[in-house]
Amino acid sequence: MAVEPSSIRDEYISYIRLEKNYSFNTVSEYETDINAFLNFMEVEGMTDLNDVTYPEARLYVTRLFDKGLSRASISRNISSIRSFFKFASTRYRISDHAFRSLHHPKKEERLPAFFYEEELAVLFSACEGNDKKSLRDKALLELLYATGIRVSELTAITLKDIDDQLGIVMVMGKGRKERYVPFGSFAQTALDAYLERSRPSLVKQKKHDLLFVNLRGDPLTDGGVRHILNMMMERATLHSNIYPHMIRHSFATHLLASGADMRTVQELLGHTHLSSTQVYTHITKEHLRKTYMNTHPRA
Image (cartoon, rainbow, N blue to C red; front, side, top):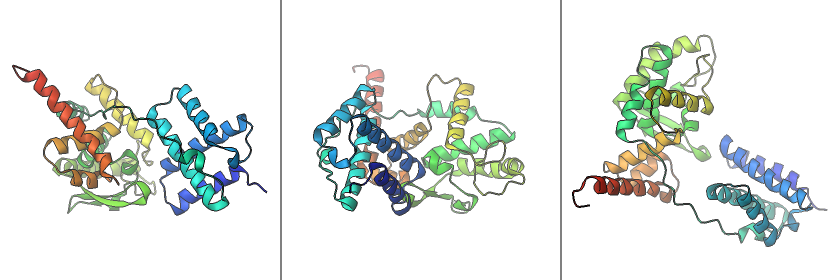
């Protein structure tokens, strides 16, 4: 008797959440991608995963292109569904040939956006102040830039994760992997001010030990961080769209441009593969080329 695709999906989601320890956001992305594919199967009249062959897989990818999804999003969809079929193959001997044979679309040549040091200086000046909100925002921005951590990692930091003496923070990265990241004197000063003069009065009687909180004293969410950064951009009157990963991109780009070695930056960022870090060398090379072309008298 064939097993319902939705039942296999539920087993798979439990597997990656509980056994593989994938992060909440990663699990959510996998579930979204798989649900979209199961909806496609239903529309096409397929009730069994064994009904899916290479032509159906190709048709699904074509539909994703028709929807206007980016190549990166389509590639992620293929990876999600391929992993799902591999699980189904192991548990229920369902063929995973369709998506295993499918090629990822060629990546778009688009370099990560980052801030120049002068732009960051303007951004930092936009959160100066002695009120509770300004102290929190300054500490948040300083720590993001000092460490290059992801926003999901930032919002999960607890008070005990910060080591004031050594100037390091313990971060829980993707796949529940812990790493220690150092931070400098600017972040330390901003954190001290926030912890002494802002956080206690914001938290009041709330019972949690998360480092960053909103103005009601509750844990700060990823969306809350994005809102804070957007408000900073408005005050700084910088004519650019900001997203939190730009701070991470800036961290990596500035380190490599100043001579840091690739392996160290890889470890600081928590990248599993060096290829994920190497994209930042392209940014620094392009920056050098533009600077040369704009300033050399015979360029």
